[in-house]
Image (cartoon, rainbow, N blue to C red; front, side):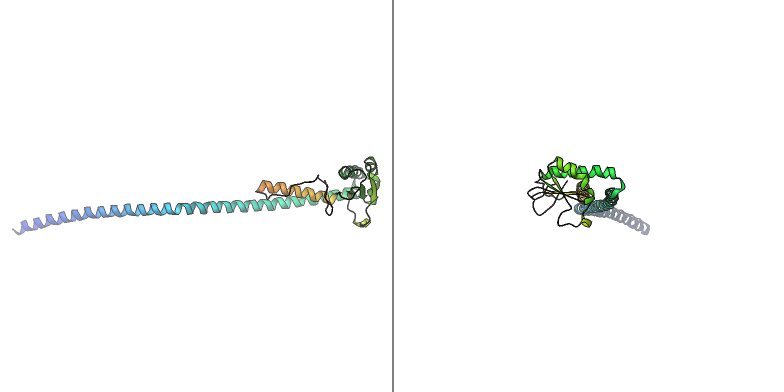
Length: 216
């Protein structure tokens, strides 16, 4: 009798354990499914922020790269123009007289064409003889460095004023280098990134209204 009772108890216990295991497996599965659903929901909520942060970091890296490129270009450009200025200054000071004679004559002819007939050409005394022919051919006159400039301050090149004084063309080497540097800077800026709208040129290149100077 005792043995029968023990066997029945063992059978009942085994059944209880099996049922418990089934229930436990079901609870674990439900928990795993719930955790996976919460994780997926959390990922979905975080995805826009993650993408936005990734875009921000990429843009920041691109900006740093552009800034570095701009610094390198600016340094190289400055070096190029320093070398050009030194070479042109040496040319104007007599390193290659024939080349300078042709260059100063060409500068004068271009400037006089912009200023018009009757223009007044201001030039260093040492260069006056090289621009006389161009001035006479265009109906202009060579007036030396100008009443408001001492001989030691006259830069190489020419400055031409129209007969009515309303137009001045600065064709000195210094002014031409400055304009070339500005044009190059604008070109580089447009290639490196968006450029702010600039002023539109309403007058012919090289001319100016009273009070300012320009040139080719």
